[in-house]
Length: 113
Length: 112
Image (cartoon, each protein chain N blue to C red):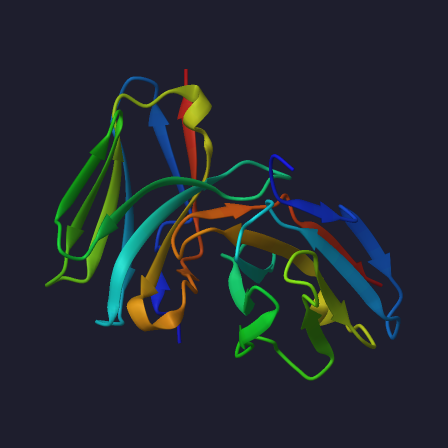
């Protein structure tokens, strides 16, 4: 039972354009959502997060949107840069789970110069 | 230390061998998590410690998996009688609050 799903295994975008990565979830108890970025042979690094009481959070080139009714979140990167090429994981947590994260399968983003 | 340190970085084990994977969390971080990441998948939760107390071990796939953190700092994940399906990257993360995770680089275990 995949509670967090990233249905696109890969995405290719031209440098300077917008990258949109999508994530769907099924558990309505999730109240906090995070995006992580992972380079090969490294651990995931935190990128941006959003609480379920908000519908948008912005940090520089990165914006996360949350649509609770659709149980959907997305990460927008604009403008995309070649250094953004990595695997992006969406993760979710419920307040009563002690910080345990449920991850999606990841989307590999390739930003071409 | 400056980050979460995991050792070894790579481990090749023969099927049936026992292995021990070590995690040195960031100093002072109360919470410590272990995740398993199979090829092409996202990390999957294994177990969680708050100081030396193991508060959640619901993700451990079988009784061959055992984790400990006896002094509330370094943690060891032990896998007994390894099987091919145990081949994965094992990630450790520490946190000073519930959502302030820092992951280590992981240990890649290959069972042959």
